[in-house]
Length: 194
Image 1 (cartoon, rainbow, N blue to C red):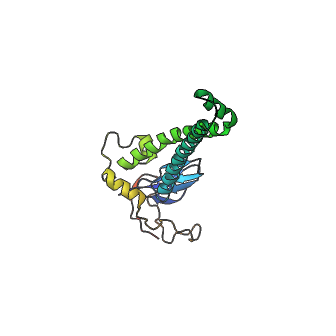
Image 2 (image 1 turned 180 degrees about the vertical axis):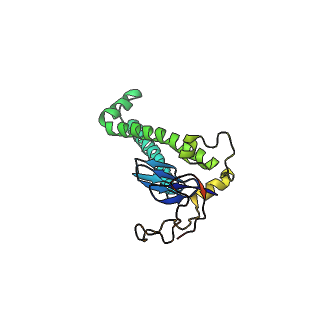
Image 3 (image 1 turned 60 degrees about the vertical axis):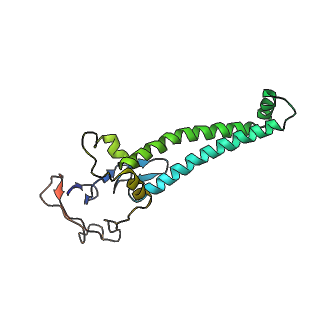
């Protein structure tokens, strides 16, 4: 297995990991840096990110449906008839219309994001790999079937971290050292969990 050496973090990165320039950390199975949640999305928090996105998507749909239902039910209770009852209800309840439109905008926007990440789960790719086009011309070695990919996404197998946060800064105990001079090319290294 070929591993890349990160000169910034001074460690060998596992496959599918990348260095985030915003967080200044190497992230295992790096998907993307999300400005909305303020951190990188990777192996250990991707399923939490997906739960967040899908729940906000559902919340947008819920707000839109409740807002529209409220307006419709209020217009049915009105003394006016037809469209005049609905316009009268809108005049007295503009916040319901604003919330319904806002919920529809959130729902529509997040529907595309949920669809994109659902596709990525089905093919077992990260956003980073998809944008770089790594598997356009060759077979994805991480694909395990769309059903098993979904199971692995929501019931992940957590491996121990490759980084020892309690290690002495600048110490080399338990971490691989770089051999062969200044070249940062891929090298064969066996990684052991700390």
